[in-house]
Length: 270
Image 1 (spheres, rainbow, N blue to C red):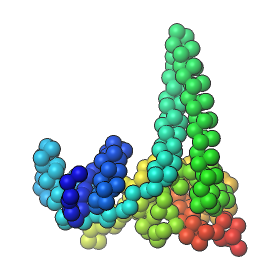
Image 2 (image 1 turned 180 degrees about the vertical axis):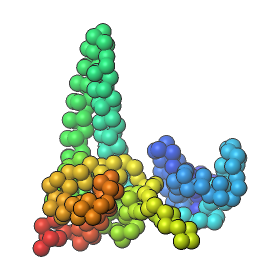
Image 3 (image 1 turned 30 degrees about the vertical axis):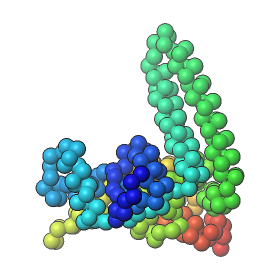
């Protein structure tokens, strides 16, 4: 590669397709950062650039990099990239299984056998990748410690813990507001003058938010702290859907503190 000394190279994240470029540039010690495409598009709209072509997009990215100067974060170790890929693949297998089971319910007899065979194949593939994930965690003292801390929490099982380890490595490194915003469970104000608008959540890492939601539903049933918090909100008149979101935020905050202090649920409660 030609010797370059750019201050910052910015590309849009494209669901993983950008990682080949990111790895090559990072391996050559170039300051690469992949940014959320929504942020770039919002920046384009704010600067009056509504048209969209490759040339315009490149210019918008350059202006975005200059004006916003997004933080350059080190690329995860190769082991972390492999682990993240395993967890992402598991998520894909679960989605495919769900779709095939739904198809089986509506399928005529002629197509049922093929769908059942595919469901069997996907089920076996899911079992294998679960074993691979478990083996990968056991190989790393750091990940094993994180898993022990996370799964000590009532409502957090192995699927949720491995997703948090892989897709939310910042857990335990940020304050409660920052981690909530990163996941997309932080409430944003919509106020103007004397008008007090609804608090809404948006953005963040949707796949992390999805597993956190499932963990929260379990925690509302089995975790005494989250159950009491949920009951208090509902008894005070909070809509159940909003109460669940508040519980997601509280559970995430608790997990963040536990990871920061390297304390299990029992140790954090004592």
